Image (tube, rainbow, N blue to C red; front, side, top):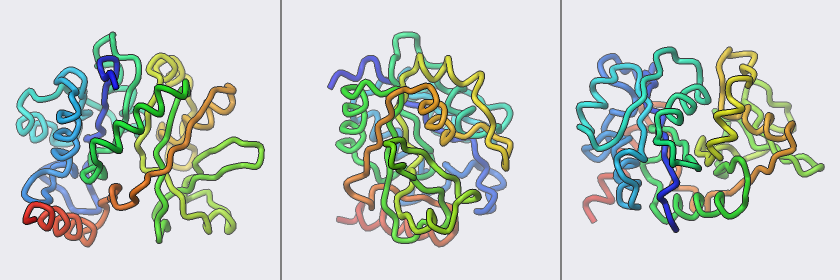
Length: 251
């Protein structure tokens, strides 16, 4: 697959309040002796992406991220934390003009993705002609997350956990927060995209609603190996991710 027109935006501006981060961003917490986000950057580099094709969106304690990667990527600063879609837009507009498709990921949950998974996702997006593709995962306990709701009319959207009906709470499929976007569509769409009402942020889940309203093509791809997505929101999850990485490195 030709990756020359692809870029990647990694959302790395979050503070990690629930994990008590005070002197470093959440993505710089270590698992297996390295920052969480470093595994994602390494995977993208191994796939063949060059420095200018990878943009880390930084914010809280940005110096720690910039110092660690030392010119391996480009950076964009999210000066106001206005949500994931705002962060994606901030990073996307910093990419070189030749980039046509953009992979957007959270820097704190992609440490276990394989290059094969990301390449397949990116290729599927390119071949489909969709303005956005979303990677989903089946979780045993999705309580902490929104759900993927597939309507009978064929449309798909993300319902955030705050809005779920009792019936929707039974759904196990959730978003990984990993998307591919047609850059031209996203950059044109974002300035008029509505905020998510209850949290007053511009969230990536809203992009599905906008694309549906515009009659644009959306693609939903389910992760083949659920273990490749690992959300880290609690100390227990951080410890488990650390153990898993240490097991891999000792093999």
